[in-house]
Each structure stands twice: as structure tokens, then as C-alpha cells.
Image (cartoon, rainbow, N blue to C red; front, side):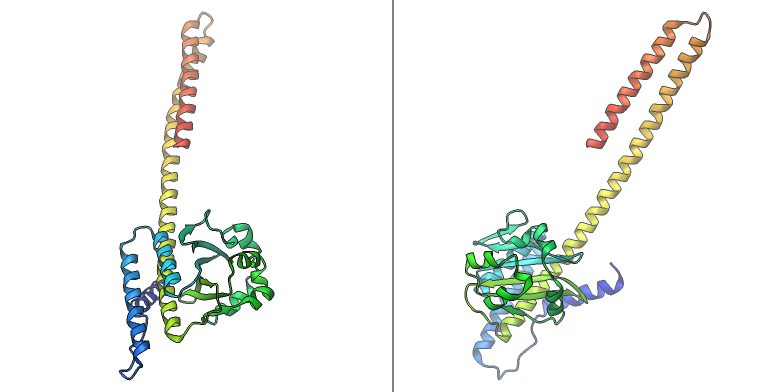
Length: 283
């Protein structure tokens, strides 16, 4: 990761730990209580992020917190990669679900490729919470493949929190409601703070995937070197056996038994090498 990306990553880390500015003492009592509760939610979520080894489980936990805190029907985290939005983690039907088990149609790559994202991207670039309602579901192209799902589940509002790392859009945190929902300013602050934690988890997941890919590539290269060395030794042995057989057959009264033995041994070595190569490739 370059210097700029690292700076942005640390900048967002700071924002996640300090999600809301201090309020003056004259602030009304109810928002102050809400802020205290919000800080408790964030601290608990950060503790989960620090202690959970599987970041996918943390993202599921984060969606569960969002659903509970904002009284949503369900929530989902969409990753934005290579120009596509794909639903990778969802909290629905009271359960954390990952790809392969998610009911929402946005989890399938076939649907993800059909979603028209240009209008969505333009709205997300404003870095504001996007609030959509049934009239938007009926008219906006992005909902074309989700309308039946929303109708079946009685979804009346979808609130989207854009997830940025620096200037890079990394995804969307979406909460869906079975009633018309609008976020108050304090709720919006908490939603963005939880979104920042999701960005951290996504970035850590990406870095882990890069490291794993590098490790797999290195292991494949090691196996290729081992196979190359093994085959080189094997072919040398086969060549020596065949040369010995050729010399024996070249003599008018050469020992045919020796030639036959060398040829048979060369065949054995070839079969042995083929079996070893297959085992190495399948390992």
C-alpha cells in the first residue's frame, strides 16, 4: 500500500475512534444521552473489531448492530470492486449471512453485472446518506432487479451510507426498513462512524486477501521449481539408461539382456516420474 493510501487508512482509523465532535454543555438532554449511547455502541464495535480474527464475522456483527440500533428490518454491506457492486455480507431474517446464503438477489454476480451503477455512483460521490422510498424503487433503474424482493419483504425505505477510503469508494452500507425512515443528525453521525469501521474491516480484508494471494503464488512457484528439479534428474537418469541400451544394441554380439534391462529401467523411471508429478500437482 502506497504512502497516500496508508495516510488515508490511518486518517479513517482516527475518525473511527473519534466519530463525533464534542457538543457544548448547553445541548439538550436527549441528544446528549443519544451521543453517550452512540459512543457505547462504537466502543463495543471497536472491541469486536480488535478481538474478532475473522473480519467477515465482524462485518456481520456490525450489520446486526446497525439493524438493532436503527430499528431496521435488514442490512447489507456491498463491496465495490472493478466497477461492480456486490452484496457480500447481509443481516436478514435475524441471521448473519454470507455469499451463497443471502436471500437478497444482489448477492449474485449475474445480477451484480446487470445493475446500472452510474446514477448511484454520482449520488454516492456527494458523501451523503441516500434515502430511497417506494416511489424511488418503482422508477430508479438500480432497483430493477430488487423490486419483487422489496415487495415480498414489505420494504418501505432504503438508506445507503457510502464507504470511502480517502477518495476511493469501497462500498455501501445499506439499511432497509419496513416503514418510512429518516435519520436524525445524531443518527447520521453514528451511521457514518459505523460505516468508517466497515471501511477499516474491508481494507484489512483486502490486505489479507492480497497477502494470501502472494503466499499462494510463492507456493506455486516453489512447487514449480521442485517439479522442474525432479524432472531434470529423472530425464538425466532415463537418458543414461537409454544410451547404455543403445551402446549394447550397437555391438554385433552385444548383451541383449543388458539392453533390455536398461530399457525396462528407463520405462520404470518414466512411470515413477509421471506419478510423482501428478501427486505434486494435486497436492
